[in-house]
Amino acid sequence: MEAGLSQSAVANALTLSQAAISQIEAGRRSPRVDELASLSNLLSRELDYFLIPMRGQEQVLGMTFRAATAELPLPDLQQALTRFIDEIEAQPHPDPQLVIDAVDPEEAARETLRGTSQDSVPVNVKAIARKLGVGFFLRPFPDALSAFLLRGEGRAVIGVNSNQPPVRQRFSAAHECGHFVLRHADESTFDYAVPATSDGEPPGYDWQNERDANTYAAELLMPADRLCQDAATTSLPRLARRYEVSQEAMSFRLQNLGLRAA
Ligand SMILES: [Zn+2]
Image (cartoon, rainbow, N blue to C red; front, side, top):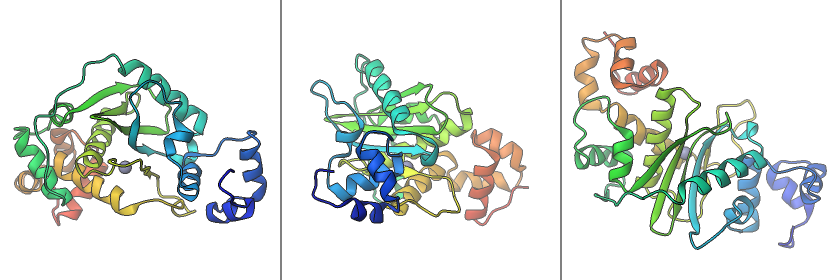
């Protein structure tokens, strides 16, 4: 630690043992993703200082991750990202065809659908991302990593884990589009999705951004006006298939809208 913080102060902030901090400092153990975010906040460092061995001119300014943090050791994440950046560097990048002004997540999703002429379901998330000027890449990542958004100078890319079920890929991609549109990655920020655990949320977790990205994704994939009509006559499994979302996501959406499938 070079920021003049004692090990016990760092350990307190992280709810980590001093022994664990010593191991991280000594290089015997890598911090997990959630620990890393807190470390970065605490030390007021750019996260990518820790995360990505930066090469070339393209500096990553912002990133968001959708991951089961406790299960994703830093070296695995680092390797996945490094390989990903290597692979996509030479790829052509889409020009943005629209900029979303709305700041409310649901309104932003509706504006996105209108602006990309997506007026039927299932919506094409990949086409939406590209019209937003966001590169979209399906690649195999470690199991715990669902998707991420990297934003550099004049360029943004979404990586989605091709090993996960298509419905999950779609929701993760829509969620990351939400982070992009709502400008959650405009600065070097780090936010990560964790499954509900008995431990509660890791320190530094930004509920509001995560909730907003999920709200955006839900309205993007399951637009309320259309779903209100469909739900009256269609069963849950059929709705899920029609919108290409998981039955769980559809069920949750129907509840939130005060609807039930036929
Ligand atoms: Zn997120």
